[in-house]
Length: 42
Image (cartoon, rainbow, N blue to C red):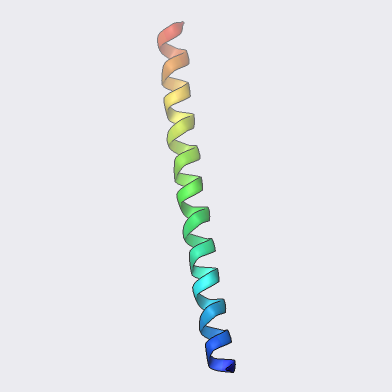
């Protein structure tokens, strides 16, 4: 049971880390697109 709980915790933290990394990448690319768009408008 303890091993199962440990594995579950590891998987959960891995998924969380992946989700955070993906979100950060999405934010970066969105910021780039917005900056480019503003430059074109001016």
